Amino acid sequence: MSRLAVMLCALGPVVACTTSSTDDPLPPEIPDAVQRAFDETCAEAQCHDPDARAGGLSLAEPDSLAIIEGPSSQNDDLPLVHLGSLGGSYMAVKLLPQSQLPEGTVRNGEPMPLGGYEGNDVDNVNTILSWIAGHGPSGGGDDSAATEGSGSGEGSGGATDDGSTGGDTGGDTGPSNSDGGPSFPRCSVEGVTAGEVSSPLDKGDEAGKFPVVVAEALEASCGCHTLADRNLNTELPFLLAPGGTLFLQYSDMQRPAGGTTLGLLMEEAIYVTFAMPPGSCPALPADDDAVLRAWFEQGLPDGAGFVPP
Image (cartoon, rainbow, N blue to C red; front, top):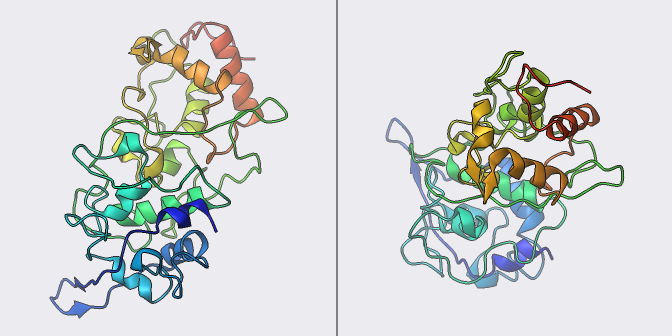
């Protein structure tokens, strides 16, 4: 049984309904991708399967239909799922990292998953959160989708045997959207925004701009950070960038962050603590790794001063 399954154990059964634009009642619906996430991560034996119903909740089909707009056994103020609002859905409150909880939100008990992730739990959690936020497969809801919440994201990258970074060494960049549109590398700026943002960094070969190859490497692997607003990350809501770590201009590299500058903080996260890219993102491609290493070793020069490797 996965750790995420253990932590879902006190949510509780619910009832739901939705309406169409013509006011004709429609049956509640759990998208196939979300149900698969429940089946793999939550509805395992001895937890939220139809027999055990831990906390009174089964997330197996068709019982999972009950999670939309119904009460949680842990929080009388929030339904388990209110489509379009992470902060208004207690299931999301249980899934989000502590640092990303919306201000004033109360979470009873431990967050999910307990002690980390197993197998595909990270992808499954992101599928569930994206759907709740209104950005996932057949998702819906009000305009507050992923705009609720503050604080920083959390990641767990690591060094690979060949010295590259990132916990996912299988080479699976994976489509980051589930709506049948174009696929983008996972954790690229296009990937985390489903193609809504492309090439956002101010780059060029002149002074005061990111070197072109450096900017392209950052956009390809650090997409959660290369945004004007972290909530533009609609595809991986579990990986919202920490506050103060967004950047678009070369001058942002000198901005104070974490007791140092943002540029030096990035270098530490990528090459010292191996916290970035996070474990659910692909490792840096070899060419991009060489570019970024050279850039940091040269002292983060601008486009006029950088010497590519």
